[in-house]
Amino acid sequence: MNGFYHPGRSLLHRMPAVAKLLTLIVTVTVVAFLRSPEALGIALAVTTLLFVVAGIPPRLALRAVGPVFWVLLIAVPLNGWLVGWDSAVIMALRVVTVVALAGLFTLTTTVSAVLGAVETLLRPLPRVDADRVGLLLALTIRAIPLLSEIVGSVFEARRARGVDRSLRAIAVPVIVRSLQSADELGDALIARGVDD
Image (cartoon, rainbow, N blue to C red; front, side, top):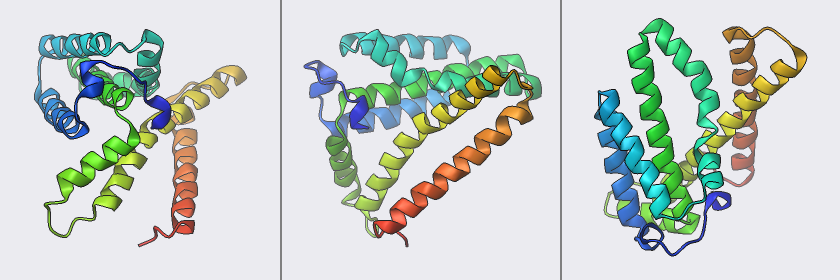
């Protein structure tokens, strides 16, 4: 996650991590309940404006949001075929907006600030291990671009070989490589004593 942080002096950079995290949670929840493409389009436009306000260069914004488009290449046609194209457009707008908001959060907040904010928010809760929740959050944030990288590399390998572009020809290698990455991560966590 440190690799995504972009130092700056904007209001978003200076905003306390706890306030940013709470705002992110509330905003993502609101976006999840938006049902019209127009409302989601406005939410995406506001999110784009926040990138400008934060002084995030377009190249970094694209790096934070771009990988999700590989996932949408599979999810949108599948959703359009199974549920309908209106639903697919709404899902795509919602996903892009949420990923952009999360990307903006990671670009304007250091890892130590995020973990500190999580601990602060969870400290009052009984029987909650804030360290483990912080670890889970860090792993989740890392898993999103990792999964996008896996999907992207499978697409590139398929295109280079001129192999079948069916959903199964793409999904099977993605699932296998994702499971391999999960096994490697599990082994690394066990080696560090995080095994219960």
